[in-house]
Image 1: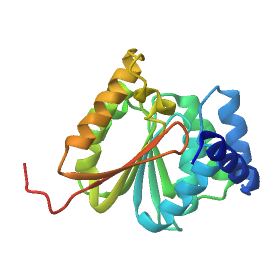
Image 2 (image 1 turned 60 degrees about the vertical axis):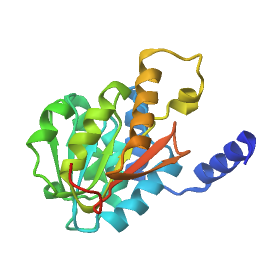
Image 3 (image 1 turned 90 degrees about the vertical axis):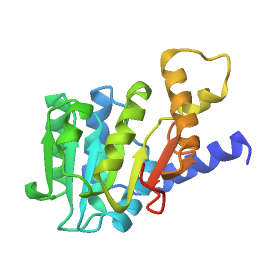
Length: 218
């Protein structure tokens, strides 16, 4: 598929995806705060994935724009699903809470941890989460993957959003810190035998990771 064909298809999907008033509020709030949020295509993908992986289960959302990504995941989880949102900024948590309330999501279906992700994730219960979604700096992504794998229940899924940096990792001339870190992460994932992973052209480039339960213990 050519780049122009992919762009045309993405634009069509985004333009024809219906979203709730609560999601519209969340997008407006994210835009006002200058946050990068999942587009309509990606948000609908998250809802579909959560309806399969997280129905009445637990998820973790590491994202400044949890008002959008968290809402998309909660939309597919069912009435007994629960999301733990991790972000250091109180204002991000406040708008996410407002978006969840606007969507009639009960307060016992989510919690907010105002902490640095790599510091707090080690304190979460191991093998207790069916989905972990993260928007994180490439320099921290490798450590996050290791910590997230410990949290996944069997059959669970990790989603790294925008981690392929719009494909700049394929450009050898790009040697900046973020691109170099994203490139190292991509190489390390390809070398691992304890996981399965897939790269998708969603957003700036998404990576899905699941544990290979049949791999020998390290």
